[in-house]
Length: 262
Ligand SMILES: Cc1cc2nc3c(=O)[nH]c(=O)nc-3n(C[C@H](O)[C@H](O)[C@H](O)COP(=O)(O)OP(=O)(O)OC[C@H]3O[C@@H](n4cnc5c(N)ncnc54)[C@H](O)[C@@H]3O)c2cc1C
Image (cartoon, rainbow, N blue to C red; front, side, top):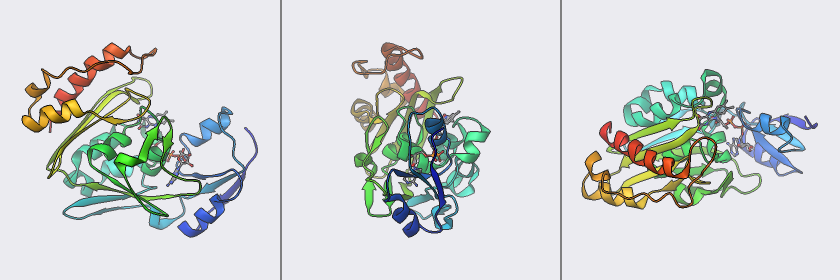
């Protein structure tokens, strides 16, 4: 592992100031960052520990939205009474991430900042019309996820919290890789006050919304409405875990499952 300076920030202002220097980056749960450094896939001059910043952690709920602090762990989301009551599908998603060690170290902010093509939370952000609150601005989820491991975040910009719209109904169905639990296909369906959103992860280089499924469910919110939807596998991931055609098939299976348990 290459050498780096380890610094702990006491507040968000200090963290963003520290991150502006050299090749610095934030360290949250370390579940992705540390293996990447260890495997020499990435190298940094400074790691800025943000886990000691109290204001970055916690869950707040109102009648319209649910706000989760960036360093809140997957285990805390999975076991939160507030999340279970207002958006139960989000608690189910968090409970299905990795294993107990990953869920107790990994954070929601780290997950969406990393934007792994097979990560679960990006699909929740898109389907639940989330707003990403950063140290500089508010970013709608539709503009946040840019490509493989790429987001709209600028250097030194810190995710502070993620605000989800509370839906009328929602659910997440995942066909997981049996080893890592990352999504081979994950489908998040949300019936919001004004629209229906369907987000898919694990299938392309970046999470995306599926207009065909959204249109079908907007006319008839039932799993049978999905039968006639034609999902083309063009551009889908085709790898050792699943072929593109298999993924296209599984999208419909997972979408039907998600709607039936909504
Ligand atoms: C064995 C294993 C299995 C896993 N299985 C799954 C799975 O099934 N589903 C799934 O979705 N994920 C899975 N993960 C990923 C895991 O859930 C973590 O969420 C993810 O690794 C990143 O979160 P972290 O808090 O550990 O971030 P870190 O590793 O600390 O950081 C990741 C990146 O995000 C940046 N960052 C962190 N916090 C912020 C912030 N607040 N603002 C701006 N940038 C920030 C860091 O600088 C770094 O670039 C798995 C990981 C492992 C190791």
